[in-house]
Structure formats: structure tokens, C-alpha cells
Length: 163
Image 1: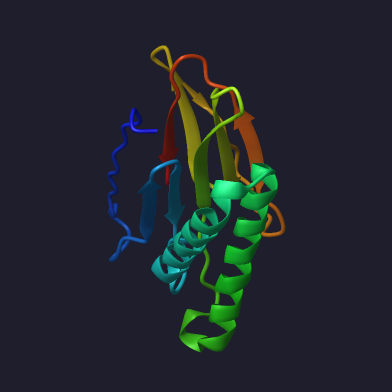
Image 2: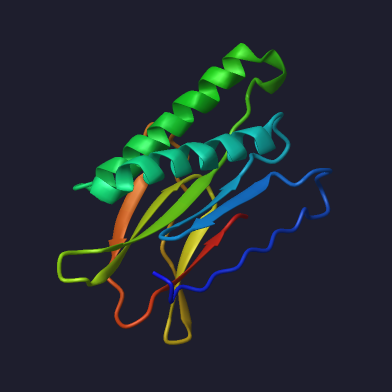
């Protein structure tokens, strides 16, 4: 996966005092999490979501047979851990985050495929031949995440965008 190039930029905006955006870029895993603006502990929730995703992927990805199921399981675990932490620490009650992730995988024929998992109002875009295509829609349910498979032709560039 060494041919992948990526970057990250975040802006606090004009309404917030602290930046609740977080990102992860490691090998075949790329993700953004945007703590819910105005909610207590948004930066804690976004960090916990990214840490959970990174742990699950580093442990399971090398031997996973169903990447869609793994992503859903990881998103669900992150949600559960955020909820548990918010219940234990009263100063974090109500914290939350969006989470959008992209995992690049090679199948048995060494064809690269990208899986995009998503919850919340952050967005993922595909840039192909100079044109952006939005891949994700807002998902407000904490019970499930949306996972899709993108079969790239030649090159895949995905932009994960916190709103």
C-alpha cells in the first residue's frame, strides 16, 4: 500500500473553543472522527472511537474473512465504550462523535478494494478522474453503521471530511 498518499487538515472554525476533530492514517486504514460540536467531551469521544478502530483493525485485519462484519463490530464496540465512559464519568455525559473510515484491502487476485464505514454527518468522497463523488449520507442511528465496497479502477483517492 506504499503508493497511497494522504494528508490531514482541520480547522476549529469560528464557533468552537477547542478542536474535536481527530484522524487516523496507518497503512491501509484511514479514518476521521468529529466530536459532536457543543457537546461535552467531543474530543474524548472522537479519540476513543479512533483508538478502538485502530486496535480492532491491527488485531483482526491480517486474518479477517469478512471486512464488512469487522468494521460494523468495531464501530459498535466504539459506540459501547463511549457510552460506558460517559456513564462512568458524569462530566462526559452526552459526549458523542461521528466516525468515517476507509480500509484498503487486496483480494486473492491482488485487486485493491476499499471499504468505507460511516456513522454521523462526516462525509467520504471518491476522487476519480478529477471528479468528486460523495459516498456517504448522514446516518443518525447509533445502532448501525453503513459499510460499502468501492472497487477502484486504476486509482482510488478518498477524502474523509468532518463537517
